[in-house]
Image (cartoon, rainbow over all chains, first blue to last red; front, side, top):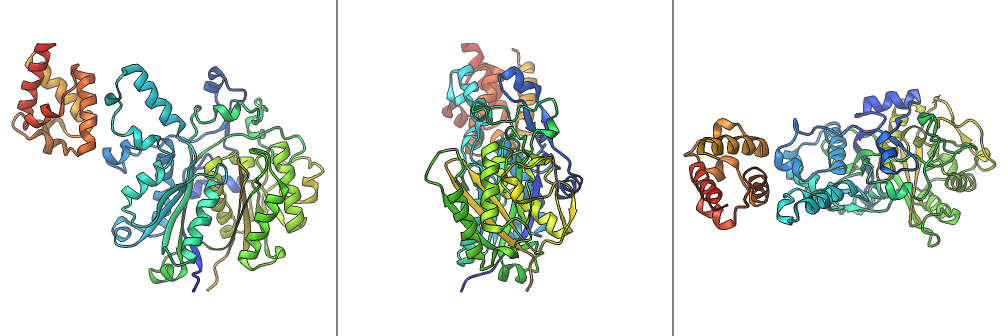
Length: 407
Length: 82
């Protein structure tokens, strides 16, 4: 018998705030987390805009050995997971005795690798690198570190799917729980923010160069958008079978009812409307609902000319032109490997607090976004069911549908 | 480097690296147990000894050391050979 899958814990560490309360305030205020980073100019970046996230001090929380294998992705993920575990009412003693898995989205460790190789170049001796670097450098740094710290005994892996990593991590966890293979999975997404991580992406010319007004640069769906703004941090979404959640009297933030996915099988970076149609339709079919039951769409829309246009058309085709749509990337920038998970967190906060966070900087639609209902300012709105899109390089698409939990 | 300098330097870099109280680094205390070393920690011990004292200890060196006093003697021997 298929299990119902609910969300029992969420945590966030982003440029909008270092915890759920701070992020909720930012979402309501339409506050941007984008800054101009002077160090990128000296480094050779075309666009020096980025979401700003503080590097956390983990010494109060973890031992030396627990910290030594962590660089930005794992450090950010630890902060968001610490919050998620607390509000899920989970501790190590409980986790050690159960089968809780971890599937975390991450697709780079550039900063860590560069620092390691710099050490080797300087010292000319790999035995003088230190024991932590290998664990910082591997793409699976997040699940390696967190599964060790939290004594997790279930599935244990990282998921790399570019900018859909965070979303697919939740989708895969959902499938495992639905099929009864796991009771509980810590899902999420992490994204490093150092300047090594985004250099080659900047080299494509894909970032906004509206550098004189950083908070206005990221303008999903707006006619005058000129590119995305990179960002990062981490988000954690703990998902669980309803049976397990009820058994331990866990809080329930929402229920995942649909997961759709597809691959474009076409260009390595350009979006494809057919792929997005298939992802959206699969999510609706999996959820067993019709399009008009979606109360809000958290769009992927990154503020690129072609990306937002394609998604606007896909949303219009599948969901119609009335459903409210916003892209929280207008405030956060593109959180990349983290985005699919963080946008679930942002949408859950909206659902819990009956509002839609604004798609800021949406001043004029283009011919594509004019067809859909983009919400430019804070709006009170009851959300019983939302859909979140994430699309990534390589043509990977993911759509998740979450609804308010009702027994 | 004389013995006093070796002791002071060792206390500083070991307490910094392994985040322990310098007061625990006493000549007759067991180095391995005091620092609570696992297999990965020996990698880092090699790095900090090289950075601070200028030589890389081998696994045989570690096997020959029990106490901090043993370590100070090892350092003196290594520095004399340098």
